[in-house]
Amino acid sequence: MGNTFGHLFRITTFGESHGGGVGVIIDGCPPRLSLDISEIQQELDRRRPGQSKITTPRKESDTCEILSGVFEGQTLGTPIMIMVKNKDTRPQDYDEMAKKYRPSHADATYDAKYGIRNWQGGGRSSARETIGRVAAGAIAKKILKQVANVEIIGYVTRIKDLEAAIDPATVTLEQVESNIVRCPHPDRAQQMIQLIEDIRDQGDSIGGVVECVVRNAPTGLGSPVFDKLEADLAKAVMSLPASKGFEIGSGFAGTLLTGSQHNDEFYIDDTGAVRTLSNRSGGVQGGISNGELIILRVAFKPTATIRKEQKTVTREGEETTLAAKGRHDPCVLPRAVPMVEAMVALVLCDHLLRHHGQCRTLNPED
Image 1 (spheres, helix red, strand yellow):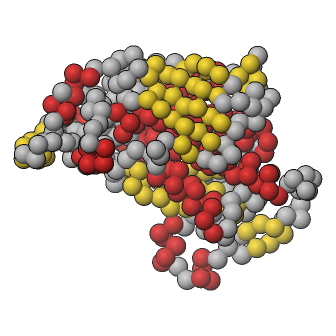
Image 2: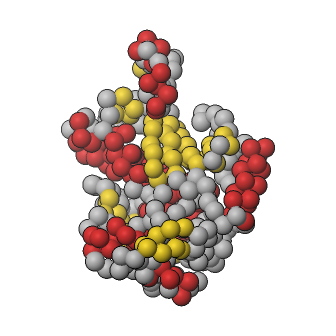
């Protein structure tokens, strides 16, 4: 229940943090898409643990296997199954958490709902579940790139109170990947890295904001009322572990403006296309993409599992304390970047297929 996302491009993730492995089944991928496993692995390498001194020290290569749906380097149009086996598991690190609930984690709510939970690393509530999302997102990105030259770039703009001003129109993947915190502002990035290290040494954690820009998104993606593009994007990124806030375009800052200040006035460009002079809408109007840059932001809370002692309760209802063991990110933001990109890609790919199915069947030239 709740493990499947999407309509025409549909994914189902599976597996637990310290079980045999995790992965995804992708249904609805168009046939004859050229696909090499290295393209998926590249995205998983950006997400994997142990990649730098400011991430969890858990050592996993996250090597993926394609078990179905691809033949001789091309997709078949049948379900694609991708599997990543868990290697560096230490379930014994969580023995104490079998009985004690971690504050602000999913332990207590999972017990309340199901009456049972996998306490080894959090099971399905672990961010390790996102391996399947990132793997599927790699395929969605390739479809979007091939069909419409869509480019999706995520990056860190804030860690705690350290903020960087980034231009979404010009930021590059190379700039994002040039440092371990994935902030394309070199000076601010070094300050962020130092702050994360300091917080980690204190046994604590911090949060921040990931921004994501989509370039060359086709006009017409999204549907009115319940399937608005920004609504589906919000659900997608808010389903990520530790996400606590979403905004698109002007977001909450737009509430400080008047209508005349906020409206994106129209003009006709040199090609005859309808464009906007500003982009406070963030590339979406009336729930439908308008061809401008789609710009969204996701707020992530501090990692819930920390080494500092905190008050909690046991499964038996007794008050106690807990200083959690195990290996955890002091800040989820650097590894959240490819996760955000993946979820945005999944939404756009799904809406692209839906738009073609509804609006281009009778008018394929549109």
